[in-house]
Image (tube, rainbow, N blue to C red; front, side, top):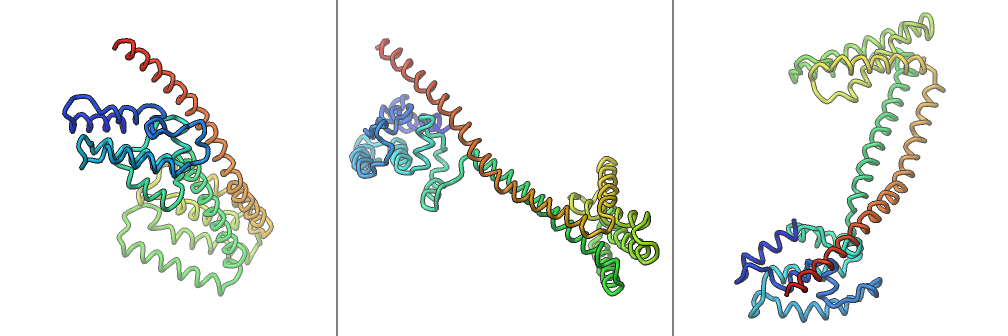
Length: 316
């Protein structure tokens, strides 16, 4: 897109239908090096003085205010010296031999070079995945701790149970006042309160029996549904069925036992640490794979360009 737009602008602003020779050299593979007379084979360390020196000479030649100058060539020349002077941009340019950034994004690139390195595509993908997974795990951890607090303390002491029921009543009134239409959200506080009362009654009379398991399952089901639900409409039977099965199995494991909750919270903490350590490694591996693929593409692009140059030179 960048190459095509640059050629279109050059042909529309110039006196002929052909882009300028300077622009064609800049747009060629490794053209930034060739036109600025920078030896790529010895450019592992950036020689900013040489880049600035050659850029000044060429900028005077192509400046729009100078006779024979061209605004688009000058803009592309300015982009070339920025890429060669910026380590991250230079590294990306060296892989493929082409500058894939849009002309419209040059202002963003300027901000990036002033504020630090911008993440590559692979880094952005892995970072988004890691953020999503970590957020999900942390949310599960918080809800597990909340459920442990309810199961181990709230339903065992009346002075904690009554304020919890009062808070659920306030939530139910608030849901009704904002006119939630249908959906489980409207009755969710009542279902959670029912589950708490069942757990409290069962714990007071017979310990952690069937009734306690059913009450805990109901509370877990509401916690789970409220965590995954994003719309006020009634969920699909598949969502309801999956939530019910998960809640029954989870309550069968927990059964109001402290150590059962502690095991799950510890596992979630270990999983979060593992993800935080594993994703940077995955990021490096993915970036290395993508760079290797781009290097092969760059070699083919350079070879094709050489063949085209030989073909057109033979025609002249």
